[in-house]
Image 1 (cartoon, each protein chain N blue to C red):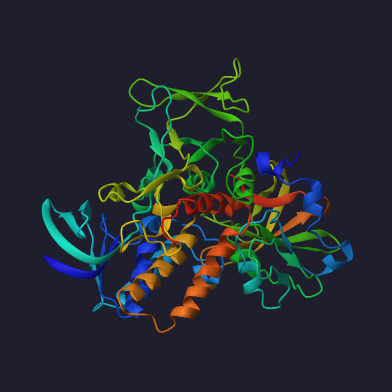
Image 2: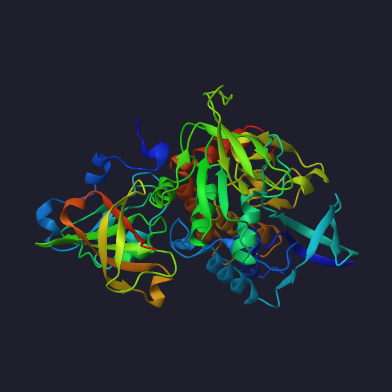
Length: 364
Length: 161
């Protein structure tokens, strides 16, 4: 069984950033990635990112992925990469079971950063299993990674940033977005994204949701309905929309299941997206030497995941006896970047979520 | 009620708050239609004339110093929200520079639909320049000539198929 100082689970923005900072500090690590390539969800983001220069603002997501991957590739002697590999077991004695090409192997770690990201939430409604009904992320993968259009017409459910951005990208690809539905009375994502869609002629219908899907072998049409302030359907407000694709974009849940295997202390925090590990201010879980970074500890933008990855990489390096030569400076810099990204109204969910989590903190 | 939060369309009052006085539009000026506090600051960091201020807290919406702004358009293709354009008013027309991310993009001299913030066609417009270079990172800067009455209405173009 091979031993590693640091095992990073997940090769997305958080994992890649953690590996780079750790390598700078002299820590040898391995990144385990389930997909065939590194980059996580960044590889399908064709739009320019927000944030500040330090988080690669105004660079397209797909190009940020290239930068982060190249940063890792600059340290071939320190960072090992295993793609197409899933971590299927995590044990208290820091042993991980890996599955690659139907063969199992075991490795042992001194420290672990779990950076598994988040997965899409789905929505319960009649016939939600008809072909033609997708998660927005799946549509984005089909379209932007594989060059396959999902269909001719799309109705998007959810007006968070992902729903708005994927709708815009569908229009760019020549797909007709018939409407974006939003259950709340106001648009969820950035208004600049909403305005981009509206000027293309795409309506965002607030206080509206899908009631049922109709189709024989595949989706043919949907019934939508107005919602009251408690999100109940209002009678006699139903309308029918013909569409061959329905895209669900109603939020993300942290991919925290691996943490369940080691009995790390968990808490359900809705503002962070669901079940997350209780962590101290250094992103360490209740299990010593197991850390989390990125969406797995609270759903946010990729810019925050990048900084959280850097921050956690810095902390773990010190723990392993390889204090980064710029530790103090970087520590303060990453902290202030996160604070800056989260200080506006869109950061409020994360701020309150983290406060709620801190109330349960086991270490001061 | 702020309709922007409901349908993505800013009010005329909001729009006008981003424009300088008419006299200043003899030369092109950047109009930043960024009304919301979101963590983002490339417009201010890319401006070669230090004309756009956001400050330490990157959630602060941008403020343009119209005395410094030359309307060069660099912020237009660097804005991740495609929320900036420039406009200039001459004796006969309005001249806009807008970001455009659809292919195929219009040709020089092409007559296109002028579109408002609701996505409605309001008039015709003429493409007077199609600006694209590697540093624009695939966001085309379209120079568009529009009738003078659409100063606060025009936002984008749609090709006539």
